[in-house]
Length: 296
Image (cartoon, rainbow, N blue to C red; front, side, top):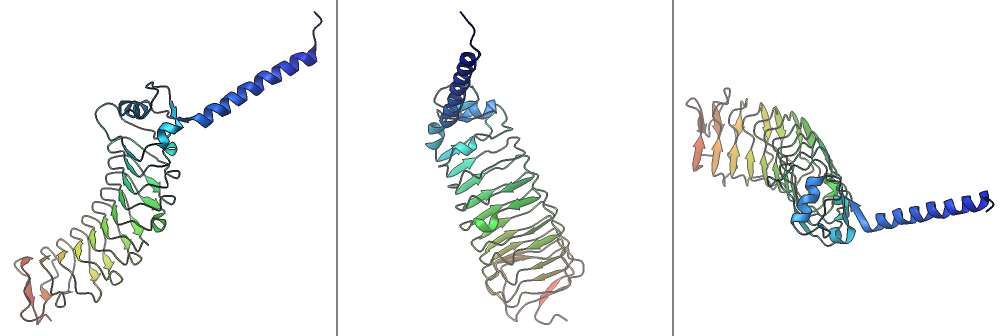
């Protein structure tokens, strides 16, 4: 038989074309899951329906899931959450105590609850997660977070035990903020006008301004380096934990709903101003400190 170069080229083209079509078909059907521990947990929960650790799962399996909890269970540590982008209808996600250094949640636009405590995350972007209500990122290595203004339903933000040195939060829906045990020196919540509860203990903050936070009730800012704090004109404070700071003056005479205040170990704060007859049920102070309506 006489060799035909043209016939050979055409046959090769058909083979390559078929292979390409097959690859496209595979991409349409499957989402990649490169981390075997992630895939194993999906199999154990009956989510990855083929039941095999083969670095992939059907997209239809992922699309049917609205709640996913793959927190550490003693069966291996997840280091790569690639594949989570296939869970496009996910509303609640828990990936607690693994070894994630990065995560891309840009495809998970329906998320309203996210738990990522105990990982190694240094930054996170939630710009494409506008439905978030609760965001728990405690015990990571975070120094930045992007997209908070877009989370217009966010109520609860938990960032304690991280590496933040500064943060400015512009989110009017936020009510609860936990940021203890960081390295904060600069802190701005002027744009969080509905904030009710704030935990900032064990940072390095020297001044705070809460004059824009009219809904604030409970403030825990002990163990900082606070020299000044502006509480604004609101009067609905209930708990003020201010001990172990460097305050030199304090006026709580307008806070008739105050239930507890701690001011001990502020070496230069000898007198806290109150209104005559004002009663505060629980007071923690040093021996040299007093509460009086006649502070100098």
